Length: 406
Image: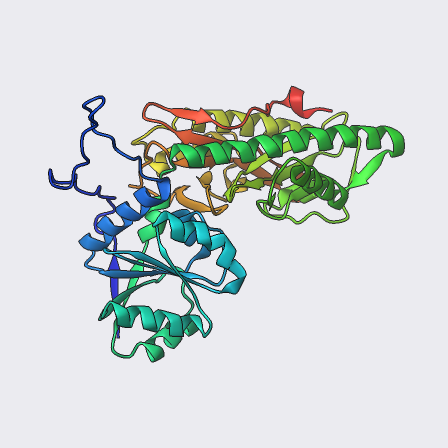
C-alpha cells in the first residue's frame, strides 16, 4: 500500500530550542555558555526531521545521491540514508568504506557496510528499530525500485513523500553560495582563456569548429579545478544559435559568424550556468538588433529580483519587453531557473509560476533569449543570489556588444 504524504504548506520549520536541562554548561573561565556550532549537514538534518514530524513520517529513506551528499557531505553512489528522530544510518558498500569512516566518527550517522543487497541491509535496520512506516522519495525512486521495496518490506507501510529535501535545498547557505561563486569564477576564467586561443586560431587559420571550441572550454575548466562541465557545452555557430539546447558539432566559426556559448562548471558538487554570444568581426544586422533587445530584457528582469518577488512577475519583465519589440514568439522558454547541486532546480522564473515567491538565499539564472530559425539566436545568462532587498550577481564577465565583439 502506498500512501502519499508531502511537505505541509511549503514551510521549513525550525527545531525547538533546547530545554534548560539540555542547555550546555557555563564556562567557569568566562561565565558564558560554550555552544559547539553544528555542522551545516547537522542543521539540514535537524530541519528535515522537523518537516518529517509535521508530515507524520517517522522514518525517511533518502535514495537520491545528491540529497545524500547534501545531508552528509559524502559524494557516494549506490548508497542510501535512513533518517529517524533518533539517528541517521548510511547503507553503503566496500567501495566507499574509507570515505565514510570520518562520517561515522563525527557521530552524524551510523555507517553500515553491507555484504548483501542494499534492500537486505535496509530490512535489518528497519527490524532493529521495529519500524512499521517508511517514507520514500517519490520524486526519485523508480517504479521498479518501489515495487522491489514493497515486495521485501511487506509488513511496513510505505509512504510516498515528495519535496522534503528539495525544499530544504531551495535556499542556499553561505557555504553553498561560496561553492557556486567558485564554479562561476572557474567557468569565466576558462571562457576568457578559450576566447584568447580562438582569437589566434581566427588569425592563423581563419576558422574553428563548434566542437573544438567546446572541447577547449571544458579542458580549461578542468585545468582550473572544475570537477567537470555542468552539462554538455552548447556552442552554436551562426544559424545553429537558434536552437536553445543545440549540441556542439561541425558548425564553423569564422569572421562575421556569431557563436552562442552556454556553459558551466561544477565545483564542490555545485553547478554554474552562463550564456554569452560573441562574434569575430562585423555582426550580422539582425543578430545585432536582437542582441540589444535581449540585453535590455535581461537588465529589466534582474531589477525585479528580490525576496518576496513573484516568479511569474519577474519572468514578465523580460517577456513583455521582448514582445513589445516584436519578438514575443521567438522567446519560448522560461526566463530562468534555480541552480545548485542540480543544474536545473526550483524555483523556476516562468509564466506558469504565479504565486511562487523568491526567498533570500535562492540562487537563480536569468536568461532571456530570441531565436530566429535560419538566422541565429541570442541568449544572455548570468547567475544571481536573491537578497532581502534585491540581488547579488555571481558573474563578472560583461555581456554588452563591445565585450562580445572580438
